[in-house]
Length: 502
Image 1 (cartoon, rainbow, N blue to C red):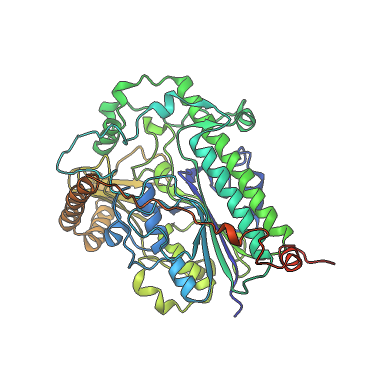
Image 2 (image 1 turned 30 degrees about the vertical axis):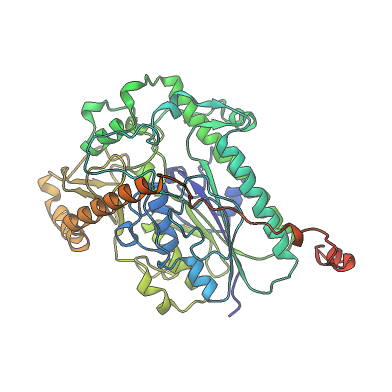
């Protein structure tokens, strides 16, 4: 079997409900729409955890946070956990990352042979929550609603600067791969930070949505007192009382978010154009780490199992997978075994290290029986929350809160909690049993607390005296670039050209 090249396009905080079957018709995303037409589209794909670092560690490893130990945005991703980059590299692939993956800890590679950019977020333990202090708000790094009240137009921002660099390096790497200096198959992961808040966009993309009919949420703010317990914790963590959110703020925030989807579409189009013009074939996977509530119910950002936060786009364009729509619920932890399957890796070598399932059998018509699992144990939680998506049902459980049971076919906005409905007691009992069989919440809570406590000690110690952070520093060997005197100019020029002289 010829091992295919693999291009993974990852974005950050992209709401999966905007991808009911590829990008929604009203989104200005021609490149993603073109990609969708030739992809298997998983319309009910879910993150393993609705937060950046936990979701990404799970995506790369195929393991839930309770197994990786990456509970929050400052938990170490251990170097002994195999990732898809390890599996593919072991099978003979060249593996490379351009962009964000929010690795925390001294290992900033996790199986990638090359990394082209630094990360946009810190790699240390500074963002560690503390379950010992429920209700404490750590102001200097917690989200707040300033992202909403400050929404609007900007031609450059911290995140734009980063994603411009990510795309530039990805295109340069694709050109380099086309030169044929390395005959190994390759896996290039390109990971952007948009459309993650703050909700700021360039004018050219902002103007695309001047007459957009989707600038207000379907479900208006329910009011703090009418929110469920976890949503109230999110409101408090986001410091909602310090901000007066107007309808215009909501419109501007959603408009900028949609504009940044179009910005990403342009970047992805540039990358795909390089792939095409350099005549390289590749399996292409498009995914997000988690979603964004975008003002639905009054909630913003992520940190919840509601659809806007937990559901993500997932599309795979591969020669062996027919284009089409798959409605069966799947997870981002299914990506690692699926990549192994598509690359011809012995699945027996991947199976012990993953909680996910290979999606290829599902695409080929074999029914999936297992529910999709999600976990959350970071800021705005005081104890771990877990969730199962099983057919049309979603069941959420936390030791601090009443159970939640939603029928997503009849109630896609999750407005009616059926957990106390006698009519659905059988469904609740079945799903609670499945949840209890999978999770010991007392043990989960103890593990999270121990991890947090250790990190508070270590971080406090490492910030005393000399400070040597783990942030990744991209390396470039200047003496091996372009033309140098130990090189033959004729060979340099010929080898750097694609296509070669004709």
